[in-house]
Image (cartoon, rainbow, N blue to C red; front, side, top):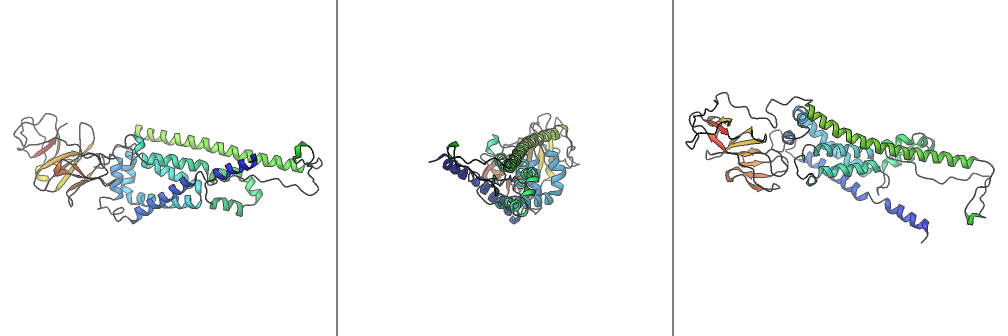
Length: 398
């Protein structure tokens, strides 16, 4: 097999290497967008799967906490529409090769946002899928639509709508924004020029005379060099931009650009009722013993009906907690952090269970928060509480 044939085969095979990745990302994002748009709970503020509740749950402990609570939660429906239709557009653009490189950029951006919020608490980090999606999109972003196994509308647009002169003059711009580079074409010999097949072991040689073929080759080489330089600049810009995004995220969180939420949003303590007195050191709890000093008030017994709940913050670790009054009047409290991905759970009076709005895990508060439905692997952590018989105040130990 000749060297030329081997090179052709390698080049032919290389065109298909990124096809599985392009199909997977495109189909997955189309499916994700359609799933959100068809979910009756996604845009329903009273449902457990409401996008606003999901964002509020993601905000707990996230580097984007202040942005999610201050900006995204108050405009949850808008962000829900933006994400769902954005995923749909990104998936379609990836499959068709329409604005392929911008689609890959925004796919990377959405995946990065999900990593910094929805799967930020997943440990180890490689158990979460969003960080994998980030690098998958980065691969397509750098590669562009060519050599991905499928036709691309971007390539057809450049070839059909732009003249060769426009393609050469706009080569850096087209390469940067669309990822379409000028394909190597043989330089045609004009009339009046002949090739000698003698000497140099049969290799073609342009007879001296008019120097235009050499000039054409020089211009072509310069265009190729510009395209390569543009790709190098894009790679450097992509790496610099990614590092900049991570640095800004850290700076945002470190400097607290947005003030902490004080309206009872995600991650804040539930405000005690005005008639809940501060427990004193000589008050007795429900077992007739004195509660430990330094306990944190949660609520009043009279303020909670059977089959209801109240949220609070656990003073010892800052995690969200949830106090539930069961149907039989018994009080139980748990660390509300889901043991799957760290989203705060909520109490559902209809099913009388604790439900994670992120991935659907369900726990039974009447049975020590045992797992009723996965993907959570273990029960929630129990939080000790004390009930003051004299004042009716319910407190949690630090």
